[in-house]
Amino acid sequence: MSHSVTIRTQTVTTNSTAIVINTGYLKTWSGILKFLQLALGIVCVGIVGDHFDNYRHTTADVFFLLITTTFMIGTSILLLSYLSSLSTSSIIPKTIYELFYHSIAFGLVLSAALTLLVQVNKTSNAKYELLLAAAICGLVNSALYLLSTIIALRTYRTI
Image (cartoon, rainbow, N blue to C red; front, side):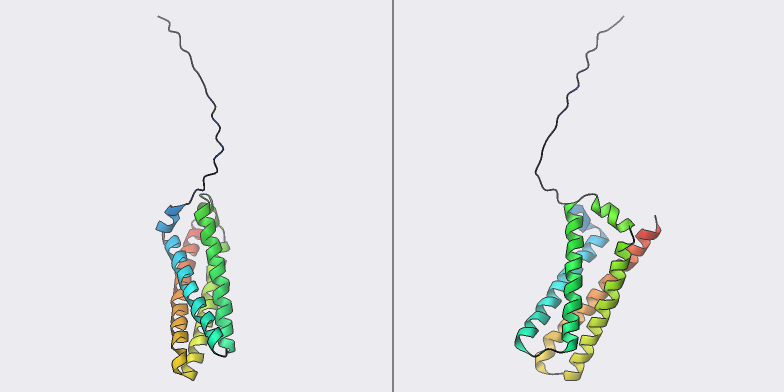
């Protein structure tokens, strides 16, 4: 017995202006670490920025503010690019960029936090309590960058 079959094809094109947010990235270890690095960077810049308005500043304050601001901006750009594109979160970690970025951030944020910590301990006035908190946040942030460096190294080596 023969049957008659009709096949219809239909092409549908859509122009969508919807913004896709890759919220799944924030559920990964890399996403959590970048979010925490950004949050601690904002706290550090806020504390030291407020210190600049009220008191005279030293080279340790300027160095800490410069390094913290630099990597806060860099981390926010990375995080925004991962959240705004589905393919970015799978492409960039496979390059050596993240390994270099996080290792350099670890070294510079650690040195800036230790420099500020030494300067605050030499001065030891009551007005420097917030700077001590900023230095401790900087040390924690450098530990987060170290963890990100380890994750980036493992991701890069698996290629």
